[in-house]
Length: 178
Image (cartoon, rainbow, N blue to C red; front, top):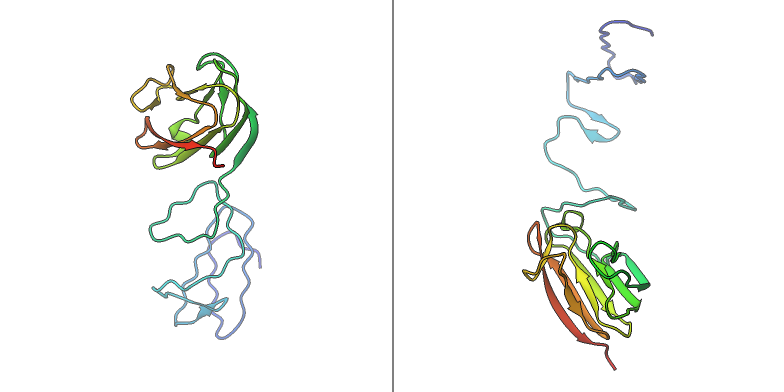
């Protein structure tokens, strides 16, 4: 069947297959109740679904989300570099482990617009020196300007919580466990 205008099909108890190739719309208006691929036509109650994988760049949940473990992304054995907020190492993961940290070098937290309000960036300083942690752009850390940064001593850890669109609040976690 080839048509250049509207087409009406009214088969009773027959299979109809539509395979459009253009940009038009397919509208199905059944005269009586029924199902399509075992889904109730006109049903108002969502049914439960089972999925094997969910890949998304972001997730907004209005209810509870349960997970055994979350893969937050880890940068292992990275090195702090640079001597200011323009030349420091830009962190790109939620969990960051410095293997080399020289006093006077630094890292830059991801922009809060990337992390999202409520997001957390964790930094482990496994190096020998104290590093400076900078905020990206106008982001502040504990009311300190991002371009000034805050210090993180060797063998310590800190979490940086994005509390507003431009503010990280830090929590130092302490020394490496024995």
